[in-house]
Length: 423
Image (cartoon, rainbow, N blue to C red):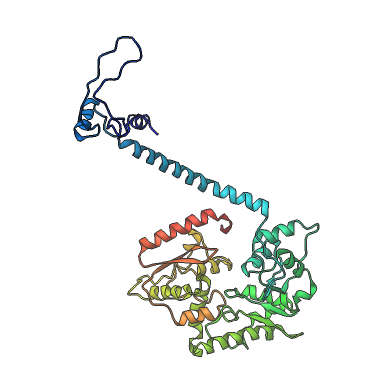
């Protein structure tokens, strides 16, 4: 409270002071003094009823004028209260992070309990680290948090050794149960391969080798010879035609037959979607692009619309799709969708859709059913831009104007600064 407010409060008086309420009646006869000392000047005596209107008016006239009530004192206290509440809120917000960290430090990382529920097939690849495996388990909801599993790995007396291949685990397992299952030979599924949607052909072949007894060199040789697979005439590789799914092979399956199993399954998906054989190529190229660029399920159809709008000269006169995923694929970075300025300016990259108009020269991944359906049925909209601003959740901002898009890019840049692990 300010000094001025305190002074105002101190100057207030009882509003009933001087009105004579509750005072004893006055008598017309003066009282006899007890002492023999001479009496002082006599007070004026008023007659009539002590609480009559006339007497009250006279009493009021005898009182000194009262200072007006100050209203500033009440406002001053209110301001002080609001300031204190604001400071308390700011302090609570500032302490939220440290308090959360303290709780996490004392309680440990988030973890599920028990041995889990529904079955989940998890693929471990050759050369993956414990950190890679922890990320895979979190992505497939096998364990609740990265820290729960990775900290458990670090606590082991000896570093666990994981064999590449497919493992039958369960959803929402405790980190301890997941680690135990990964070290159990019975959990590893012989001759089983899991191909996620959007996997590039080079990684599909590696997964086939890891999940079967087929040497990688044999698979690479079989993939180099495109005859016998029934691919469209435009195809120069298997890219786009290795359907992502879970496969179990019979012992002694040849490299060619294993690959053909995946190609035939992709043709089946195209047929079920109503794609004519002569349209397989352009459908797969577009679907592979959508597969790499889209995040959430509903966004697949919006991403599809953006690319079709950019192929329309009436809406986008350059015809440049400007997809970072195509540029990254052309550089050999099949796991990335981010690029540098120099990479986007490289005309020597035939997959560079910042330089070369139209669809890329070929598929950039192996799409699944959802991406194929989105390529055939784009959403209605006027969007010309999109940016996935949160790479953890896949949340994407779609825009019609460049100004709207720049605001989305700023949001993505802010998120990237907070997540340097995405580089």
